[in-house]
Image (tube, rainbow, N blue to C red; front, top):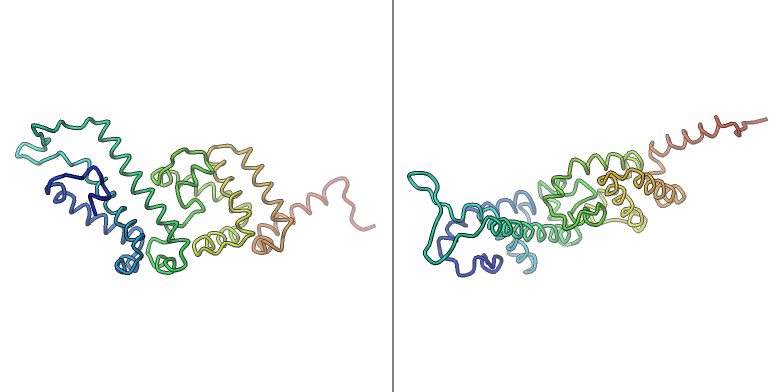
Length: 271
């Protein structure tokens, strides 16, 4: 399994697999505790072969990623040394860096693909929701790094980019909540979590994500434009968005609009 997932490890000796064993065990614990949860992990043998292959790929690549920095190090009485052989030259720092980046991208890409598959599977989602970290993995409308690429213009974004930008994304979503109401935002996020988006939700979700992406880029004029457009659409279709229409956010906005109209020079009340 390890060699199939890690082409670089092909023809390696037994020492590599001995060194990798602890990292493989750690990667398995990470998959159980920080991803799929005990229910799916303990039921691994009952999962479809495709899901099993994806999990094996994630474990192998995460283990190898953690192993790479210490592959050529040995502990001697005088401290750490570097393994040297007569017929293999040490890899350059750039080659090792490229291998690290490629290995990270391999496992993080597969992780996000499986995350989406679990979220959209009627069979697996109920079991995935038992994971202790399920809500942490789905606490934003930007669930995968592809959202950064599509909506924020970050080319070849990775899971690492998503994690680094998580605080900024959270701040951008606060702005979104102020406009669409906390109630509708939470409802929308819950629907994403249970794969229950309605057609009306699907019409506005990309626009909400686009406002977040524009906000991340600091393009506040675009944020205002996109937000005005989508809120205008929602308010013209109240039957499709009852949660927002019934929220205090909308009621307060309507009161403010009424007050502004009343205070204008062209407003007349009664006789």
